[in-house]
Image (cartoon, helix red, strand yellow):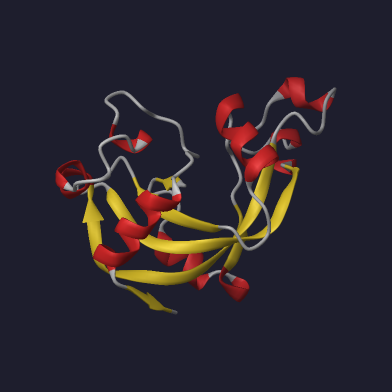
Length: 152
């Protein structure tokens, strides 16, 4: 799950009540479909900082609540407002994510590109901008081994 640290960082997730927050504002149908159709309570997620000086994987979380309507799409005062969502309140959804561990060795995008076994990882594809992307079990195993997560 990508996030821009100047908008919402892994530290912000950790500081949230019960280290849990709705992952709101996703406005891409493919990313929405990943959340809606595949993310289940207890699934582990990688938290990736993007659009920053050193993009990369910085922490881990888990799905704490499965997909439900993202009310920010209905709020005209929200930057995530979508007037079309008023007619279809479930047009945009989000999941709740709980921060569970910080990587003691954050893995930068440059490092990820050099790691054997991660060549097919979606985040490494040029131009890939989806904020929610699937990760294979094999890729996750490599990342967890190298990132040395420390529970919060």
